Image (cartoon, rainbow over all chains, first blue to last red; front, side, top):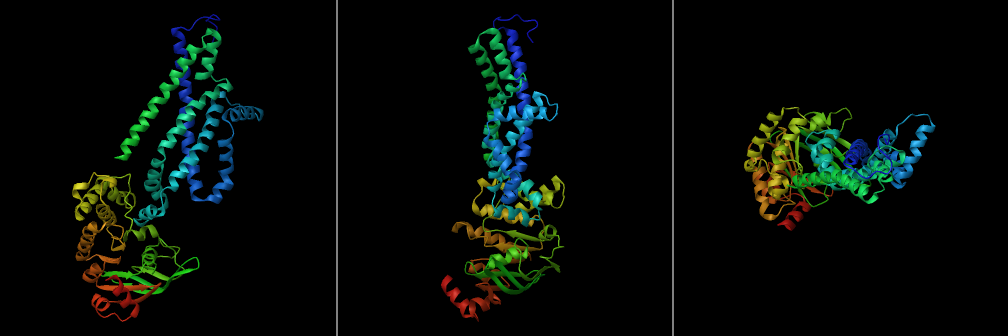
Length: 220
Length: 240
């Protein structure tokens, strides 16, 4: 990427565009891993809430591991593992997959808490109307339970968005990686980091505002 | 017709229902009274299959509730149930609360199920609360919403599990009035209740439960006038 740009030139308007493109990559990685991880995480949370025994022996340990090991170690470990076993996975794909699994581990415990907060009387009210088990889940238990833990989920999502910076260790040109490259070239770390930080803020802020709006709406 | 034969129910080692025999005919209003823990609520849960039974049989219109082959979801649409804790769905408006089951279970169209819901909300006197969420309703209104929600499935039987026990005293009346209205319309009702006035005035028969046994059943005049069982007499003397 430095073909046309001289080494050690100052931070210019063009660099803003380069960072914007990197922010787009960050957004892409985060959106894919958060949405995928959330769907899978809710499924895991549901299994955990249904049966402690089945949950513990199937996914409990794996989820604990992903929740407990620093993300940067997971990224390096699995990216290299993918390549060792001959799976040609791009840093982007590896980042999305690992961040996604990490997200699902966090979402699983959040979702479990929400689903368990809907007690037997409410479930029976659904069943007594003739709703099947799955209909009761879909129309009663999940909407009530998952809304109750929505604020926690937003916390997870924003955390993952910021943690996506760690995908930089795999070399994918997302926000932090590109910012680092720019720092090397411009020798203006404070300016570049401030701009990169502003991009992270610009990505996070709409999410938290929209979340607050949804919470207000649901409370009425 | 609801037919209960030799029904036994255990919670672990606890023998909650000790051989209940009871038939409830179409159009009848039966009130079940008795102390807490006498098994009367459990009986309702057994009737619509929310609790498994260990011995005996419950039949609703000839269909055995606890048979493995029985489509319970379908059978339950015949029996509306109203709970002590009204359990309105907090994420849905009053109208959506009532419209949910007709749409999901019976596959009615959105507009059709909303029409049904509107009619039932009017039925219980909540026509001005259509778009209100349960959190903005009083306990009495939420309980009437729960009644409308059950009625929207056009049940042939209504089971009331202490429908007024969790309500503030000043809200009990509106719920009892709604239940009276249903009785007058000819609904078949089984009401587990602590409201002796309601049991006496509205019921065709009253059953007294004592420690998992149906001690006595008969017309209200008998139960409240000259009860045959000493337990019944003692219970009634205490609640008066």
